[in-house]
Image (cartoon, rainbow, N blue to C red; front, side):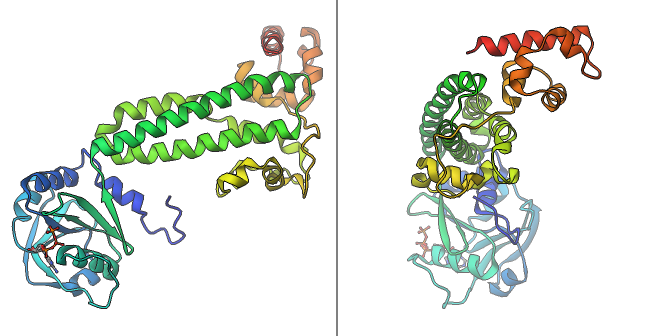
Length: 350
Ligand SMILES: Nc1ncnc2c1ncn2[C@@H]1O[C@H](COP(=O)(O)OP(=O)(O)OP(=O)(O)O)[C@@H](O)[C@H]1O
C-alpha cells in the first residue's frame, strides 16, 4: 500500500488514525453504541468550506466525549487538518450532485462526494447499519471491528508462520550447499521466492497491526518474533550473490515486490528479473561471498566479515590457519582464534 508519487497521505495512514486507542476511534465507537450516526470530515480546506453550509464554529479538542455530544447535532462535523480540533459541527454539506457515487442513503452519498470534492477522507457512522466507514478517493473502506481484524491477523500470522518455517527448512539445505560450493541458481530462486512470500505476509500483518492500534499488542509481538527468523536475510543474499550477475545492482530483491504470485513461482522469471539474463540456466552454479554464513552462523561482526571476504575466498578462509589469519592487517591472535572458531562452527552446520 501507499507509495503515492505525489506524497498524498495513503488510505492506510488515514485508517491508522482511526485505530483503537485514538480519540477519534473512541468517539466513533461511542457514537456507534449510542446509535446516533455521524458524518465527520477529516480535515479542513477551501474545498470543504465551499461545500459547507450553516452549522456552528466550535474550536474544541477532539475527544471521545466532544465527538459523541456534537454528533447529536443534525449535520456534519469538520475536524482540523491534524484532527486534534473540532472546527465546526451541525454543518450541512452540499457537494456537487454530479460527482459519482454508488451510495444510497443521503449521509453516505454526501460523505462520498464531499471526500471527492475536498480530496480528504470523510468518515460515517451509520445509525441504521451500525458500521463505521471511511470514504476516500471515491472508495468506501469499512472500518472493521477489533474481533474482525484480529481474526484476519491471526490467519495471516498462521500463514506467515508456515512460510517462515519453510524459509528455515530451505536454509538448512541451502547452507551446506553454500559451504560445499554447490548452490545452483534454482536453489537460490527457491530461497528468494519463499523469502518474498514471507515479506508480503509480513507487510500484510503490519497493516493489521496498524489497524488494531492498542488492541494489536499481542499479535504485534507474535509478528515480531516470526520476522526475526528472516529479517536482514534478503540484504545478505543480495550481497552474497550480486557477483554472479553482470550488473550487481540488478540483484535487488525489491524488484520482485510487484511480481504476481505466478511469476514468483517461476524460477526462470525470478532469475531473469534479478539480472541473470534471458532464459537463464537454473542448473548453473552460483557462488556465495559467504557474508551470510560468517555473520549469522559464524556470529562475526560485519566490519570483520567485510575485511575477511576482501582478502579471502570462502574456501580459502575455511582452510586458513590462525597464523594465516593473523597476517591480516589489524587481526591479533585472539581475533584470529575467534575467526577460526567461527569457521569451525559454520562448517559444522554442513
Ligand atoms: N449533506 C449532508 N450534510 C450533513 N449531514 C447530512 C447530510 N446528509 C445526511 N446527513 C445527516 O445524516 C443523517 C441521516 O441521513 P440518512 O438516513 O438519509 O442517511 P443514511 O446514509 O441512510 O445514513 P444511516 O445509515 O445512518 O441511516 C441526517 O439526519 C443528517 O444528520
